[in-house]
Every structure is written in structure tokens, then in C-alpha cells.
Length: 382
Image (cartoon, rainbow, N blue to C red):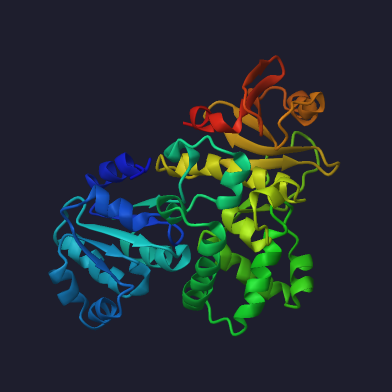
């Protein structure tokens, strides 16, 4: 079994907080992780209708039955959280409850109301290449994605993702919001996949889907809450330049995005118009995973001025900015440094570190900045 990078942090926080909450998308490995880290705890899943009814109808009896437990899909019974608050206030021992959930909004709304200050919060995304140690074909990884079940059971992406999308739409989407036309919502998700790596244009999305901008914003929020997409925000430092203030849209998992784009093989991906955008999404997602796997929120942005000068990803370090250009090509070109050089020239006074992450195999140390193979991301972002 592949070990998860979050294991040690999960153990540490369970020794300090009465409740630890593990959040993330469906099938990211949350249940396996908490059962592995806490083998002596009782386990109950609120996906099970009997357990859910028990928790809803008799929350005190439920928590007496499960005094020191893992409660899976805890957001299914939101009224349980206030009773958990009372239970841990009366018996304030570390690691009393481990909660998991696959819906960010429903879970955190109740945490804010009932468990603020009582729970540590961690996020688990699908595998990272640091966890799998994988250095196989780049196109294979992008096409396949990193969901644990695909890797563990060697499931073909075209067999996994149709069921995943259908389950997600029928269960999670209905739970978050009562959407009457699920087919139209699925079309919206596919259109988002076609805009991976682009500036978010709500007007265009709503017009092509035939929905209002208000509805498009609401649906996009659902995709964010359930860890399907994320919005990379523009960096706030303008350096006396007029900046774009619109976020960029990315998918956490490129296998899911590839499926939604109807990419059916690695060979098709190699020549697909979206390959560069998918590679960019893959790299930024890996950087974000490196933060989440250390129990931290990510501090990633992009930078773009009104003239189109752009840095794909800016990572805020404690004492400087790391400027990252992402290139899917395998052969280094001199013009790859154009935007990095420009940003360095206008951001004087800020200690910058330049980095190019590309689709090739070999690292290079150049005066203008390091060139890092995608394979060596784990060593670069520890």
C-alpha cells in the first residue's frame, strides 16, 4: 500500500486536538488513511442509511455508542456537530473524534458554528507523485490521473471516470444544491474542463450553457466546494503595473479533466490542443498538494498585467517570491525566460527566485534560473 504524506501530520494533530477533520474529494483515500493511522478506533460511516438515521434520531446515543471513533462522511448529518461539541467539552481528550468529509461547504459551515477552536483541519487530495514515486510516462500520468483506486486496482481511466462523475453528480451535487437539470450541470462541468488554465470568464460560460451568470457562479462554487476545480487567484503585488484581477480555472485532477474533454488515450493527449493547459494544471495541483500534505494552506498565485506579461505560478515564501514558469515541451527554448526576466526587472527590491518546470527529463542550472524536470517536483517542493 502506498503511504500518504499526510500520515505524520494527522497523528501529530490528533495528539493535540479533541477533533481532527479530514476533508477532500470523493475517492481521494480519506477512509483508508484514517483507518491506517487509527486502527484501534471504532469506525462508522454516515453513508450507511442505518447509521445516518441513528445519528439523526438519537445523536446522544450515537455518540455514546461511538465514544472514540472515526466518523466518515460527517457532513451527512450536520446536526451532529453541536452534540460533538458538547461531548468534547465534557471529555476534552486529544483525538476523541476523527471526522472525514467530501464536501467543503457543508462540513466547514458546521465546523464554524460548533467546532471552532476544537478541531484541526486537514485536506487530502488524490495521490501526488511524491507519494507514488512514479516516473513513468508524463502523458500516462496526465491522462490517467492520480485517484488511488485507479492506481491500486489498475483500473483504466475510461472505466473509472464515468462512474465517478455520475456518482458525484447524483450524490454530492444534489446534497449541496437542488439542481433540477443535472444534464445541463454535467455540460457545465465539461465546459469548465475546456477552459482549464484560462482566465475565468463567467459570462462566456453562462452564455454557452444557456444559464444565468448567477447560476454559473453558483455551479462553479459547487465544483470548488467538492474539490473538482480550484481558482488560482492573481497575486496582489502590482509593481506599478495594471493587473488582471480575474482568477484562473484549474482542475485538481488531470485524469478527470481529460475524461471530460473526451480524451480517450495517451496517444490522443500527445497532440491534443489542451495538453499544455493540462500539464500546467498538473504542476500547480502538485505544488498545492505539497502544501496540503504538510498541513498548510497553499500560498500559490499567478501574475499577469494588462499587456499580457504573465508568470504561471508565484509561490510566496517566508522571505521571497518563487516565480514559476510551466512549459510542457521537452526541449528548453531561450524565450522561456522572457516573462521571468521581465518580472525580475520590475520587482526589484523583492528577493525573487526563478524556476522553470518543464516536460523534459533533465534539470539544468542556468544563470537566469533553474530548470526542473517535472519528475523532480517532489525534491523541489518538500
